[in-house]
Length: 448
Length: 81
Image 1 (tube, helix red, strand yellow):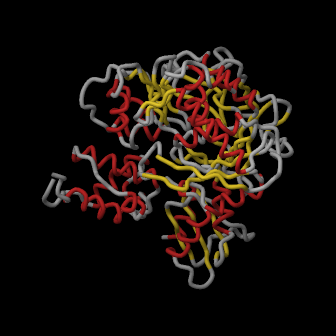
Image 2 (cartoon, each protein chain N blue to C red):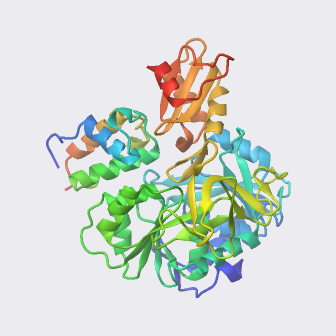
Image 3 (cartoon, rainbow over the protein chains, first blue to last red):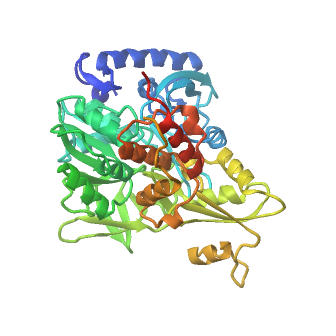
């Protein structure tokens, strides 16, 4: 790991929070974190669950876990206790790292956290992966996705071969969470490897993002998701921003109107990336020349099979037995509808073939939301659909109120997975054979 | 800043409609952290000011009406100094 991520001199700045953190300081923090993890019982071949918001503590404990020769289980800090307990029972890490104190959380991109390490089990890690991430599952519980150290290193090297990424000595204005693949590999790991400074804005607002760009003289790439494009497109810059080189986003398709509003305002390329937790970056269009199509990243092959995109992925990325409908024979079945141009190789993603939706760049499977709502006490039936946002139609027995229902859901589902609209119905619409109706217009009618 | 701000519920609903590119009458009343961040940002742009909101204030916002009350309070609070 040191050869890949701890390159460069001790005096090289790797993070600006906004105080500069140099590699020497980071090495020291990682060493201290390694000691704490070892004291709590983490051993080579074990696993550490990190339940931390993006923070220096997260970076230090992640790298310390890997330096120990252990597996890092990344738990989004927005997950509820219920979701985390389920994950911990399933994965049995040796230690859990969580905040004992955290300052200024709301609207923060990077949080000031003091981490505590507690022992959890004495089992070895359940798989040889370096990192485990959870993805909202189509069968109820989350999918457990693993990536090996070699796979992560290969993705970091892939970034170095993509034209249009931030170069050594430049900066990334980092907006996505480093717990998820874009911020983790495209931001943190690539930045440490290539000598690119990572600069999260002081808070999540258009003015703060532009202030982060203007804070240094070196060229800056803003890395985010489409939500952040809208934020910048609606921000009036105080003056010229010669440092701004590009904005690059991943996560979901960007509406043309939003893309045009951004480029009109800033006059720099708006790049697009396509990736998945299972494989990392799959393709890019960092100059915005082929929108919405992307060019496969170096070393990645993309095929179209019966309207679905398949991506080369040598090993089964799922922990446990492979599901042949998701991965088989070195190919990941993305469940993204799409086409591959036979002449140019350009890939166009057309949307999902299943019930997964994107909320601010975070993937949410509506099946997980529906299974959770339907399993609540007092709920007799539930249908969850996407109707300009996650919308739940619920038939309850007795006197379940919307407020109680909302509270019960909040105990079980992270905020980004929760329905924005709840509709309590006396009777759910059903087909003549008794099946729940899923058509959005029919559900709207039943609720009106 | 002082005096009563001209910020109404319809303004917030229209900002949310812009975020989701949906008609204003289909904007959900419930807010997640992303919608709340968007509203703070848009209100700051509109008034060319920074809203100083505590974590507790933001954590208490569940609906558009909650957000309106918090924003109006912040916009009418006397500036420091």
